[in-house]
Amino acid sequence: MSNELAEIKIFSGNANRSLAQTIADYCRVPLGAALVSSFPDGETMVKINENIRGRDVFIVQSTCPPTNQNLMELLIMIDAARRASAARITAVVPFFGYARQDRKDQPRVPITAKLVANLLTTAGASRVLTIDLHAQQIQGFFDVPVDHLYAAPVIYKYLSEKKLKDLVVVSPDVGGMKMAYAYAQLLHADFAIVAKRRISGSEVQALNVVGDVEGRTALIVDDMTETAGTLTAAAEILKQKGAKRVLAGVSHAVLNDKAIERLQGSTLDELITTDSVPPREAPNFKLTVLSVADLLGEGILRIHDAESVSSLFEVNDEKRF
Image 1 (spheres, one colour):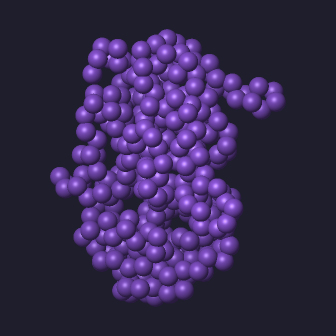
Image 2 (cartoon, helix red, strand yellow):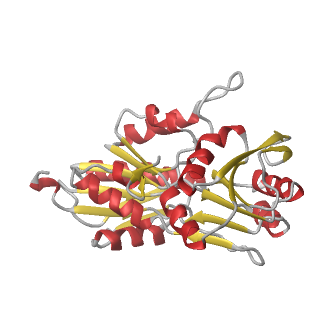
């Protein structure tokens, strides 16, 4: 890489500054000095307080709640970096919001994932680094390179240390079968699926389980949860079918108040997630938060040095994802 890009600069919005700081520590660079605040009328104000001309700039910002505020901060920070003559700008988006709106499944609805991709590119992002998109085809919505990482190696490391026996990996719905099957192969476990019916945006009814879970430890895997409706409904029917213990591994836990209430009253024994979004407290419930800072930090270093990131998908020297 040319000398013009010899220096990494990492900046953060207000979405998850602790994660950004840990990423910067991994990369052994100081977190960049930038003012990200609001005018009295709510408009976002950004000022980068150091020279980034010709630098390789990485802006860390999840588009988690407050989603629109965090998205605007990201867009304005990218624009500020572009106008400050950064040589390259990478949007590091650990959790990519609006990803569920990735197709027209009803008349007269938007494809918002494509709109957000266009906004990031128009603002000046040269590439995007993210983790576990809700749908992998969203990578094709971008006209710039997308490095799509997976939280699975981080979650696998934690699970392998627990030495779980009689494990069966469960997909909470048909859409999650590919991810669940990948986990099943990785953990050398059996595979099952929960058939569900969605009643509303926050209400789910689990109907049946396909696969043998009786007397076993069930691990539900999914890319994200917001209201925990799917997870808690799946946990309930798995216990009814004889599972002795039910865990959940979720890449992004965007938990609202309803989700915390459901988890506390559920049959789920543990929720394992990452700090891609700021973690919430869940009193009287076992919520385990694993850090993806090292994963993202290594991705940043490899992008900066023009090295492959594909080895970050490997577990036990085998490419799994």
